[in-house]
Length: 264
Image (cartoon, rainbow, N blue to C red):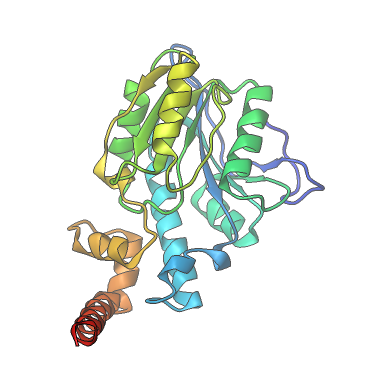
């Protein structure tokens, strides 16, 4: 078990254990979920054309809570850990019964996951399941699917984004089985590295995990889904669906005017 300590320390990783944390089945890999979160007030700048700073933060917090809810309901996950330096993210994690792990400094997703993976492995944790905080359609069943197909250590299971460019969920055993590099084109490089290292590799495609919310087009896809997540309820309550339609119409009219000018 990781040491319990204050939320923020001098460049150290300190775990605030807000959950009871049960014992894992000795026949199963001891798997912890890790959700890396940067400062919530800095989230989703690519939605600035549609949402105000306050709306972007509120939407991200709603999506984060959707991910937490799905992960915490998975019985085969021994613990759900939020890796962050953001006090608001820590409060949300504890409110839901998850644990908060201070990364010491805000270094970005790649560095936060790497530091957390190293700490988990040092403490004897056998596997890590990385989930981002911006996949509000993720379900408990999808996470269980990832865990069910995950191979014998050393192994990687990776769920791509819908465009098969990003890496939206990664299970690793051991937690440092391969270096991870996140970004818009991380999926195929991760596959190449896993194969080169000889890891048992699985790549399930799951629609909920596959939709990460970064752009106005992603918001439209989210709003079209029949499910009712916190994120969808927030968007509906703020009438953002209508705003998206107006934004699309405005862009279309601008394109038409530009085309006509060019033809002249």
